[in-house]
Image (cartoon, rainbow, N blue to C red; front, side, top):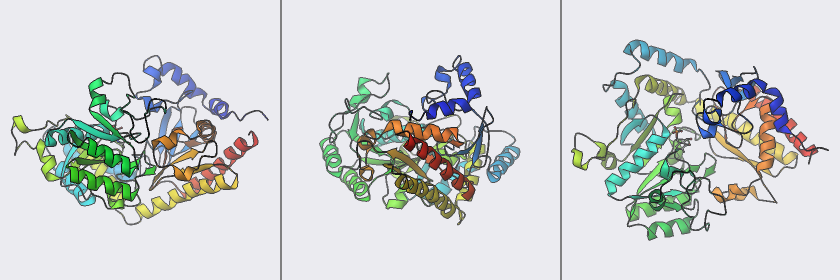
Length: 455
Ligand SMILES: Cc1ncc(COP(=O)(O)O)c(C=O)c1O
């Protein structure tokens, strides 16, 4: 039996995307506007979306589980979000005033009700900016320069956030004391020196490293759910909280991904009952438009306050488009729907059907593979050489997974009408139906059987 060539199936169905890729490459490096949007041989180029479905240039229809890497939790073109945008534009008579306006404080008040740590809020235009500003205000507040982050955690594409994002095992250093590794050219030596890398879900070594560097650390930033699918273990998160409090280091939860994607409102901090000093949001709060926010303790956030502080003891935070009224209206409408009592239970039921359905298939068809992750995001790993996937609890474990099997699975699904980014998590939305899930599982079974028969 020849090996199963899922990429050939994908290519056969996406000729127009292939052609557009050739055109786009002439003008955009790699034919894309962000590295993560590319995957070899070329990505699907989209041209229409509605509800839980998306179409490509070839006219192929897909059930969309990428949802723009998470933000479209109500699906594409939700009527309530649409209506809110139009109404806001018509009422305001413009896209944006520049002057402060009512939506900003209204949305801030709303977020403060949802997230336990939020006493003050500032808006940004992306998740990246939210984490960048939260780190800077922590530095300003503590008057210290170094920060700590966890290996494999993503906080946006700027210097210290990219440190040790995806290091290979050869350069990553000992598991208990990871090295600061540049994962982008252009990272300065200073950035590497000012970033302390920590091992996720490892209580002993994280505490040891925090204690060893306590005098120069302003903040610890972390994804409470790594890349949306590896949960911070409750006792680990508790230990990090207690240690940062004891050592007087600002604890920042980056909830850009997890903020609205747990099994209820309130983010991972609500789920585990641990309150960070600061948090970051993005993705869903803009209802599909660029938006982010950093939120947290009043005394820390106050370092940006132009009323209480002069230029000499203030942290600068700005942005022409911050708190964009049309975008906040889209975010408000999204939260309106999320707050309806039936929304999260429905989203969780659909996600569980999908994730459990895949896990049943893996078991029934004899694959060492697993769908894992809390809330409405999960990832799929294929284990290599008898790897026990129940043990996956940090970045180093994910390095051991079988990328070749996952690639076959991904392209087999893409070629059969499921859209998501290869090798990345799956996201669900309120518009996914039971029929979508039934069709998805039929397709997954077909692909897995093809993979099996070619083994
Ligand atoms: C946890 C986390 N933080 C920060 C970011 C950066 O957000 P943005 O892409 O809006 O800049 C992302 C994006 O995927 C993320 O998942």
